[in-house]
Length: 158
Image (cartoon, rainbow, N blue to C red):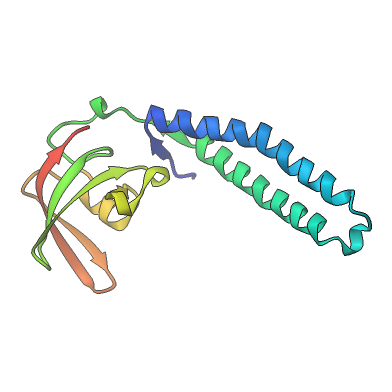
């Protein structure tokens, strides 16, 4: 069974545009690089040609991965979830009981996760621990260093 890729309508449209650009403009640019390299002569000793073909292979893998991501996408709307529990797109303020430190995260799809922006995937260990919890509840995440407990202090919907 394939895992769903939850994302907002906006993120879906953004990725869809990226895919269209890659399939049209991106493919044309790589084909041109291959044609330019081919014009340099003997293909058996042409490093530019080999590099362009390698770039084409990697580019096609990116297109396939993005196509797969979009084909398994499930569009979500924050209005579909209750206000009093942590769900995807919720901003949640927690207290890390182990180090007594407050942190705020937004739960997002794996495609939108960005730890530097405090956006964590609902599929991550912490994301899974937080999902469905209410203010005052304790979420437990098992980590290599042991179990870490997080107290839910506040939940904010987007």
